[in-house]
Image (cartoon, rainbow, N blue to C red; front, side, top):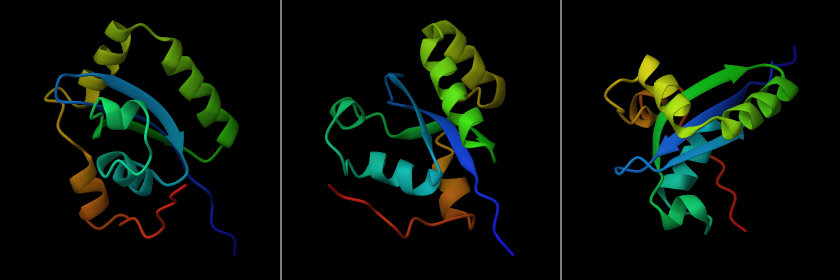
Length: 110
């Protein structure tokens, strides 16, 4: 029996609330990579490593289009979306990934 693939659209933030929107098929691994600065770039430069929002879908095209949509949104609209489910801007990573859902096992480094 084939497992259904899950895709995530997510928003990470720094303590000063710099935002990053991304899409992945392994949310815990990807946020782990942000937290440990596995890749050099925007999120490592600005310490954007706190998972503050995510959505999931089984359709990769829905995820890709949703990521593009969120990236086009103005900052104020992204903040309203985050605060609709996470008003305190808590890091959701610990409960989601260390709380038994998925602990990253595959870290890709290039």
